[in-house]
Amino acid sequence: MPTYVQHEVLGRIPDVFNAEAIWQPPGLALFARRPLLRDLLERCPREHRGRAATRCFAHVTLRLPQEDVDDDYHLTRGNRARELAQTLTALHRKDFGDLLGEDDVRYHVTGADDLAAGEIEVRFGHAVYLPAPEEKVLFDVSASLDSAVWHGVCPVYPSQRLALIGAGATAAAAPGWPFGDDAVLLLVNDGPDAEPVLQARPKGAFDCRFDAALGYYTVTSRHGGKRLLVKIARRIAKAPPAVAAPSPAVWQPRARPAVPALDELTAVPVPAAPRRVDSAVTDATFAPGARARLTLAALALPRLSRYRSTGVTRLQVPFDRTLAFAPGGVPAIAIAVDAADGLHAVTPAGSLRITLPASFSPHGERSLAVSAVPPALAERYSALVSLPQPVAAPMTGKATFGRGSPALAMLRVLDTAPCMARDDLDGGDTPVAGADRIGLSRSAFTFEPVAQGLALVRVSPGQALYHLDEQLGFVGMIDADDAAAPFVLPSGHHVVAGHYVLRFDA
Image (cartoon, rainbow, N blue to C red; front, top):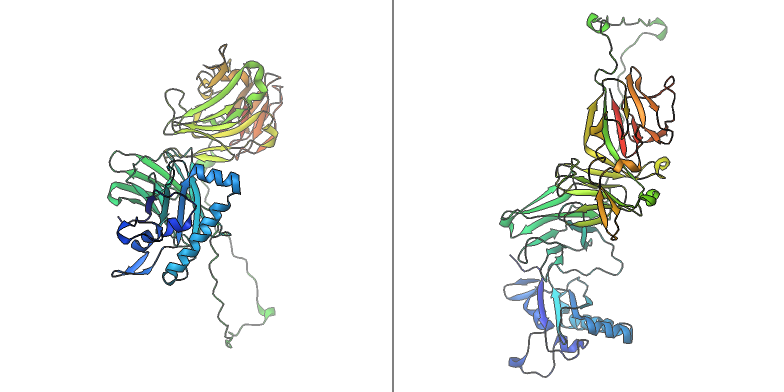
């Protein structure tokens, strides 16, 4: 594998801000010279023909001991670091001016806690790029172990050809890097109007594939099966394709067929084709409710700040690898709401604060969508979690939905699972079951499928019921409490009761 980043630690430098001592010490015999920055650049050219260098590297990063950088900031506001970069830039142009071409020499000075006093680390090479002062970021690179918690890795700029990602000293660090120091990812950028390409090295040790539907790369080790997800998000849009100028039109006379005068034409209506009547259709009888069912399509996470008097501190909805509701064991991902109504995605890799809307694909099979609730529901609810695997239950007649009713108990997935935590006497959180107690009445509403839809009657006066359309948009409140005049929910629409968003399917 070629060397994409030249990396060297220079030691025994009394003054780490002395540019001449870093570049080329004066007055030393050739055999006593230590390789310093000028020597390294000369020995490692960017391009060469035979043994002769034809082009040198122009971007160099210097890492100095953090204590020296802090002292410089306190005493001179960072002037010595700026002067160091400016002097090295001038020396670089003076000694390698004929090998620079159109490249702009750039130096960047930063601090590092892993360097001892008198040490300086230098980096340059094909994958070292320093942006111009006004240059904007083209791509943002982030990495994740499970697609739920993403960590920023590095930016990529329009003129930056290569970026190296890994865990070693020569690459941009990816938090949670699972592959060891010898493995790296190479990002190739062919310009603002091209899509970036990610490759893994050593090449035969990894599978690196891009999933267009999920929008990220999956890098998997062929030995051990360890995996890393890499997302490359574009900041600068592609330039629109050029539109070719239309060719000039050439008008030529065209012979017109002879037609009779307008008053000689007669419009004759075309008879419609006879319609076939299927007697089997006309004899069919519609039986309302024959295939009617209620489907748990989403979960409405409550605002726990409304229930401070109960001591509830957290409500967590767990999902397994297939994104089915999984109350037992270690979940692949969980969506949680805390006592301050904050939303979090929790995975074995850690916790991530959720900004709505959000989507998670822990294992690339299905996506879990978390969206904001309609404004009319915002006083009671924090977010809607759409279920990738909805739970459906058939309806055979009139029944009651509520925490005290056995009807459709399979839909009340949060009732018996230990999804809720409450303050205990020792100041910690104790898992408890029965999350329905903070949002659902014992008898919330009665329902019965009819020819026009689902007839609903609110039973408990304190139960809030919301009507949502097919796209989970707010339609109105359901306050019908007279069995003689029920509210009729159309097929495909939703009713929200407690934590549950139920869709009527007929």
